[in-house]
Amino acid sequence: MKRFELNKTDRKLAILIDPDKHDEDGLMDLVHHVEKLAPDYIFIGGSLIYRSKISEAAKLIRSISDRPMILFPGHFTQLTDHVDAVLLLSLISGRNPDLLIGQHVLAAPKLRRMRAEIISTGYMLIDGGKSTSVSYISHTQPIPRDKEDIALCTAQAGELVGMRLIYMDAGSGAEQAIPVTTVEAVANGIEIPLIVGGGIKSLKQAEAYWNAGANLIVIGNAFEELKTVNERDEFARRSL
Ligand code: 1GP
Image: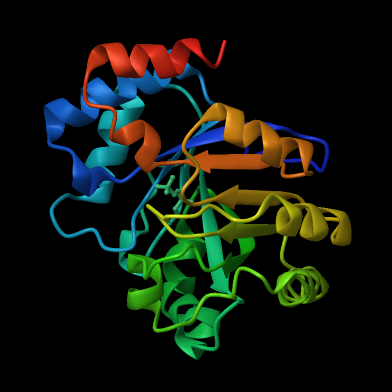
């Protein structure tokens, strides 16, 4: 088991793999390209996994990559022991009690038995310009993108109640990524590490978030949707 290490001075990258978007060959091909990009972590998960089995996908990824694999679960049914760590998400931007404590209660017995590291994470949705799967599935409204003060106070509240990380997400495939100024305000206002994702399309964009104080950038769609080997190689080369 590899530990999930994240500090306030880190500038790290994770690639998010949604196993439902790939058949077995496609997933293997993707993971080989993720290896060329050499991110710090592979995240695995999705708002709704209905085609694939998360454990099978995690095992397949592990057969190709030794990189720390972190589960980013959309639901407690996605829990698997074939990962190194699990982000135990509390959706603190929303007011749906099921995603603040209900799912956690149902998951607790399994979480206690798992070998993977469990990391309590304050998860905040920020409006990314369109309705996303996570917003629909979670029955919650994201924080308006121009309400920096609400984002900051929500993150601070998450830290005060004991979360180890804050994850600000515009949602997978967001039209607009989170404003850099909002990320900067939150990063400066909390003492725990900050993860940022949703709608980030390039490593240049990631750089702006690292400079603003984000400690881990998550890129999903922008890398997964590159169809040709050349496109993926090009994205990987740009990271060197
Ligand atoms: C979504 O933050 C992740 O939860 C990644 O989003 O797929 O838009 O990169 P993208």
